[in-house]
Image 1 (spheres, one colour):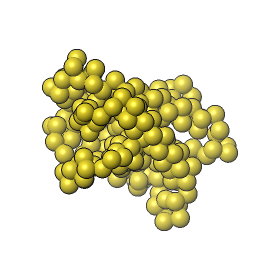
Image 2 (tube, helix red, strand yellow; image 1 turned 30 degrees about the vertical axis):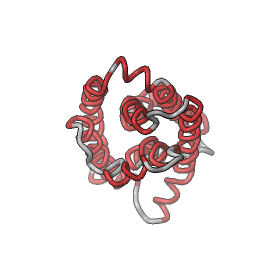
Image 3 (cartoon, one colour; image 1 turned 135 degrees about the horizontal axis):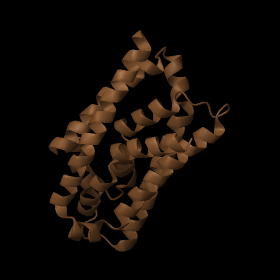
Length: 208
């Protein structure tokens, strides 16, 4: 169980990319008060947590209702996560999180907590795919402890994200945009390898 907790924490941390939230949050809240920043960060994490919990509880049943096997989803999920990894490594938008138009719209919104922070940055397609991949084989009724351990790992990543957003202004002075990009590129290499492993596991299970 500890091994599953640590593995899922690492994978989910790489997908959510809390470090990438630092320049984003600093940009979206530039000139705002501390109370506004705190309110937006806390609300974004709570909304993202609700979305993640919903997918963890109902995602596998939804796939089953559509006749999609978890192995087929594992292959697609691995490919999607690979696109996220490429985005991280090459520091360019692949469209897996948000588009340029969506970013421009978010800057015009007074409340940025739900969009774009909670979705698609904290609980976007990559994060929800990861949730389905890990929670799909886990039954909350048969394996409650494992389910709880995985949820704790997801919650820990959200807490780290919250701390990153709350300290975004100070972190930007230390890291700068270049430092954040370097860290994201290094993490992207690891995520790319994990994504390929998801595809390999899915193919083996489907045709093995």
